[in-house]
Length: 126
Image 1 (tube, rainbow, N blue to C red):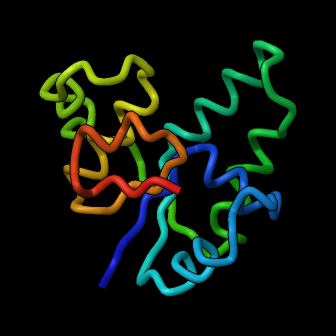
Image 2 (image 1 turned 60 degrees about the vertical axis):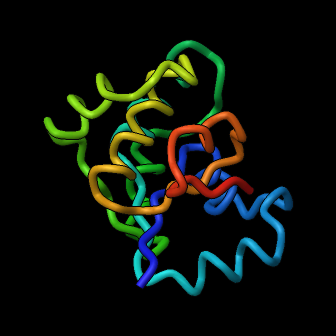
């Protein structure tokens, strides 16, 4: 049973029905046993909205997790400490946290960022 953790971009693509998410990937997502979105992704969206780098409503994005049939994955202490164990392949703190969550929870992280694949076989790049 495949459990997936969507990175922030993929989550936004899904809820906005972006054409960047091809039919093969949509089918793959539909076949997953469970799909999670990290609370860190909502935090990232909120920060980027406040900085003017993104237009979105963080409260609406949070609501869309459940409305989309996804589950929210809270950030736990073991996820945070897992970041310290990762090599410095990537500098983005949100992406590093998502990798640590995927490794800790034995989920596949679905991302568009090919640099994250260096961390684990659990990373799936779109």
